[in-house]
Length: 110
Image 1 (tube, rainbow, N blue to C red):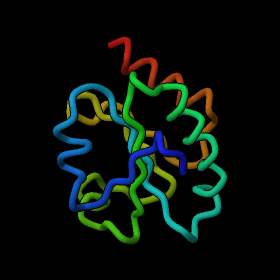
Image 2: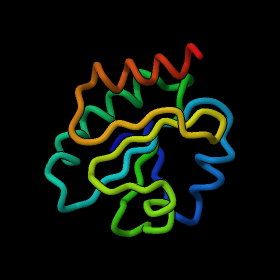
Image 3: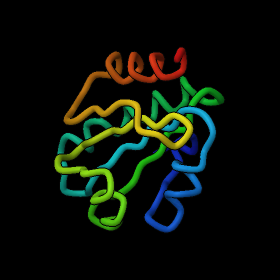
Image 4: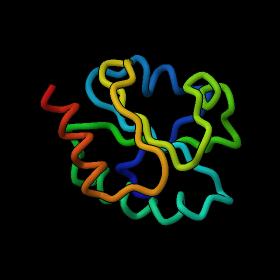
């Protein structure tokens, strides 16, 4: 995980995501999840490309169940886009960098 990706937990989720101004992408993942591992370099690239425009976060779903349950995360990987603390889009499963970028662009342009 690059330094451009913010690691969030149940302890700091409110501050890092829900109270954040602007666009935040949260990637729910788990150590055992093969598609999550495939997504890792894509999320790192997105974090670098959108630095200064959007905050990119990762949260381990196994270690942080409170917000996984609150946002009804049922499958991994799940990415949720928040704008000013409100959910605006959700991507489930292994998705392309292009699809993630399009979802981010849609939120940034709104």
